[in-house]
Length: 106
Length: 410
Ligand SMILES: Cc1cc2nc3c(=O)[nH]c(=O)nc-3n(C[C@H](O)[C@H](O)[C@H](O)COP(=O)(O)OP(=O)(O)OC[C@H]3O[C@@H](n4cnc5c(N)ncnc54)[C@H](O)[C@@H]3O)c2cc1C
Ligand code: FES
Image (cartoon, rainbow over all chains, first blue to last red; front, side):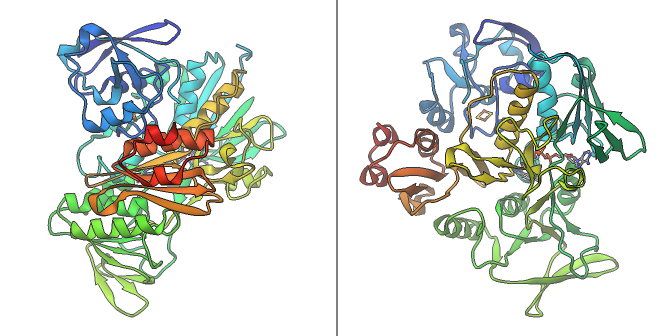
């Protein structure tokens, strides 16, 4: 279980408990938090689950697969701390994680 | 918020209907929401049923859109095991399968589609299966495993995914297809050839250009698929995947405009301003392709229409049109398709199919209409942007995989 803070583009914060084993994307979708579309449901095929990971959490969220890196390379508004949230698995380690949403996923 | 409290009734608790209910709350809708679904479980995702779930890499919880508590917590009256049977548009009410009647201010039809059945002898044998619902998927999963022989009738995406998952589980798989190539309705020949070769290398057998005329069995259970030639392809189970038909009868009977599905506009509105329709049941505009209407049968389209309807109901601005897209996972292949090959006059292959990494671009003049990419995210992502912008590209550059997609699009 991890407490995760999702911050919408307009600054609205949502703090929820997410079960270990789910992805950061699922944590948002299952709690009906706006800002993450996740068209492909986590298949790493759509890049509509784009988030910015707060600096302090960059290491703990792990490294990217070639597929994720390649998808993000072509997504819009990408920053050095961009990730596809469906590719970050939640664990106790991520308790306190903060992610921010881009203005749009499409 | 431009909306006043009212009652939105959603018929069909699938991917589209479940998403629309959740979005209405996200957008601040404060009226009543009733979500009526024929299936016994809350809305879930179907794509994994032929992919990760079938292979045992995802569990049932992973498939649900929202946990079951979500509906009560969000004041969405979710009513499973219930069907809408008749719409009375004059009095704005729907008769349900339990005989009760429900009144609506706004109705959303999200009844999806159902597999086309083959009215052939033996089709009612045990082991002749379809794949649309979680229950169908459970039945299929029980039939695939080491040493089991699975016949897949229909070489479309779902059939091929089932074949790949079947192989992963150790089953012997044969795909029977009426056309002379796989994916005949949905993909170009280069892709058909590629998938055939790849599946063969994984041990799948193909019978193309063959007509299935029935199923044979013993003690009520299937033992083989009968072909027109008289030959019997032996199997322990057969899964029929020859396409779907929209559940649009209820709309037709209510006098709504229906073509190849319930006709809607870019607000997902039907010919009745108080009735919306979303997802597989609709035939919808494709704004990137002029006045084209199409029935995409895909999750991204269902989600886009759920947004359109929820936005219209909550008087929010209409969302910007999205480029249609889709994906498929088979073995270690990720297929991503953007756009539709409407009006394309040429196709161009970027990369070498033999490497398992390539993309097929469909062009109208120098403008990309659609792209089918295998293990090539840059081609998919950039292709999608080029489809939206209609920006002409240099064919020479596009055909040269050593030139990056960023440069091609620059
Ligand atoms: C095995 C499989 C794999 C797929 N893979 C992909 C993929 O990789 N990518 C992709 O984009 N798409 C894929 N699809 C298609 C995708 O699942 C559909 O496009 C999507 O489910 C459409 O959502 P929907 O809500 O319109 O329809 P559905 O999800 O079918 O939901 C409709 C619901 O309405 C119910 N219903 C019907 N009539 C009534 C009534 N009168 N009253 C009440 N309820 C009713 C039905 O029982 C059903 O639960 C796949 C589909 C299947 C079956
Ligand atoms: S949900 Fe599609 S890439 Fe993350």
